Amino acid sequence: MKLTKLSVAPVLALSLVGLAACAGPVTTTEGSRVKLYSSVDEMSDESTVIIVGRVAARETTRDIDDLDFTISQIEVDEVVKSDVPLEAGDIVEVRQVGPLPDEESEATVVPPTPLFEADQTYLLYLHPSALPEPLDTQFYVTGANAGAFQSTGALSRGGSASFEAVDHSEGEELPTELTLDEALQAAE
Image (tube, rainbow, N blue to C red; front, top):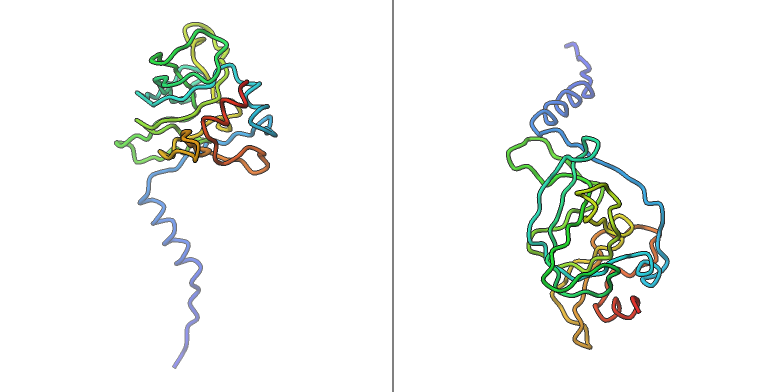
């Protein structure tokens, strides 16, 4: 009886290619941060606007260099700091790199930082977009997503709202949790 040696590698490779063909293509966008913050005080100083607000609406746009951006309309609940006229009830538009998920597409696009979730409340450290009109009223999150904290729905011992970092970066010296009282104190 003659034994034949069969190599598993080609069969395994073909199987993996077949599996990859079943799933849609995945596109990722990467970026690097210019600066890591050493404290909430430092991030506050570099932010023009600090607010607590709820995501009222989101849309994907392709209005700069053929790149996808998500524009979130944030309804302001509380103004922690603002160098521009702003009050509770106002809408602030925040620009993030990457599109919203497309339910009809087989392709998956993974943005470099997590996008805000609809109807969620955030503590946001923002700076002006510095884009030309009519986009000049929009904001970016300070430090990519360093300045984005999502509400935990919990209150601290002192009764202050509590927030978690949306996208904590390695090497960052910012807390992973922050209360509204701490944000107010840092903004003074």
